[in-house]
Length: 439
Image (cartoon, rainbow, N blue to C red; front, side, top):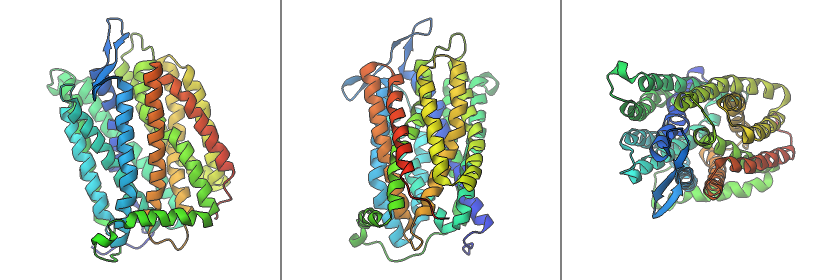
């Protein structure tokens, strides 16, 4: 079909709808059902619910189960940080971003389906599927995010970015509720226990992701073809990355913002990845069912995040993006202080609601703030967003490695929260030094 014009409402909505398609991965695999499933497989408790063994044999070592998943997560993000500049540079050069977006979407979705066969007997296969699903999800976002300045004018970007996150939260909650009903009411669906419907949730995640993304693919432009892909441009992405790195010396605003983003995003993404594992091991659930409690807290985060993303967009329109990000980082630091001391489910719910309020806001506003700071004559937007994503992913690698090491050394993930507070404080200081954003 003929490409829709930049700023077209239908084009903007089609772009934002990919959040509806792919966010089920973030909720079902990263945050909710898979972490609980992984914990149930790898943690042995006594009759009173006390943990008596949480060690997992991995690569010849008996490691804390939090440490294993943290290290696998860090390794996957390291691969993403290496792949993204390589692939996005090629995509910009030959103008086929949509093909790369599709490839990583299908890789991630099919890997989610592969988690159906996750068990301790074939732990390596399950962790490999988890590893590839993470690579597929985050690599697809490189190309998805890079479309933002191509399809939306600067004055539209905050609003459509927030709409994308909001659609993602709503869509992922719908699927999670369906999966939760299937798991908790398994008798009504003809299942013998919770095991099969839990693993079927991973299949539904992959099917949802592939199915709904087709609407986005139908309307997004393929890109402006520049040249055929040859061996001479195979490493063009790294050249583009180096060019962007050098250009930062002439763009103080963007350089300082990226430094701040690297530091605070390290903490934000680590919290989002470890929150459920923290709830499984660090809270005293008493007679309350921990699975139901954790799902409720995650749903609370998602629903409040819709409000948070919208409110943040409106606040930024009044006081500016950087001031809003500073304010949000202060709230994040206070949440970490509170989280270090929580021990009961009710306290966890309060923390979850607070996280939801600032989670959607900091993600959507960080993305649109970066987009606004790009040079007005920037053509290779995928390379710029690759640089943005590499900064984020390397930060996640550091954050998850710190968490895994602290959890393994101290036996508790609670202590890693202290390091995250330092990152938020550092982010605040660096944001203060960012020159005023252009209007």
